[in-house]
Length: 215
Image 1: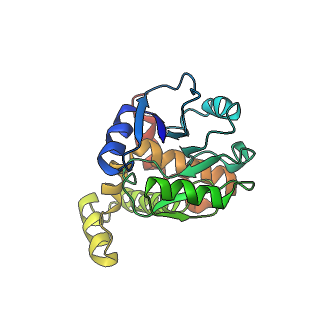
Image 2: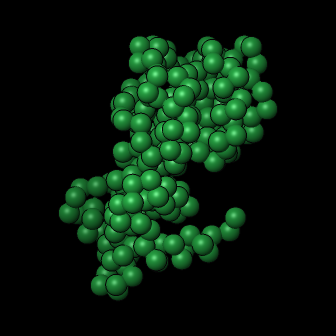
Image 3: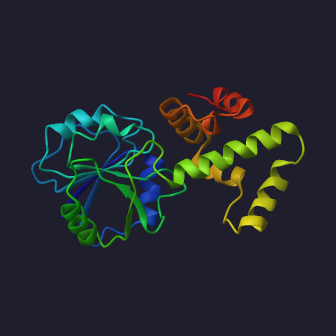
């Protein structure tokens, strides 16, 4: 199987370190130009940030795409049955099983065959903005920002207490560094705009730090 991987260089390096492609031929292109006739699968590690790639994928319905679709609302991509969502965010690249989702018209049997060919365990979740794990972790990080803003505990203490109290591998601020503050904020903002649920409204401190990030 010939696999074309596209996306940011840092995600490509993380993907290479975390994922085996089972001996299949794997080529990386930082920015997708075209999909050759020899390509059997596209893995788009940065599809959330490059939704314009959907136009290229729409023209190649015979080539399945496993794209990072955490921040994009499902109606944007659900009309394409050959496009499958995966949590390719930093910090989750090596997550086992891989968190995935199908569109409303997606073929579960074809997807299962694809994942077996790759030798990857996977967990199907409902197609939703934020998926499941990124949404939950981002909400926990947001709550930690509210706590830090109150000044009742330091960030280090919040991380330590969360790890001790919940047996999580990382504290919320540690998670934030792994996932990237930009991704955390944009997940929260996307889910909040879609649902109106105030639990996902980014805290003022988190928003302040996000707006201070270089673009």
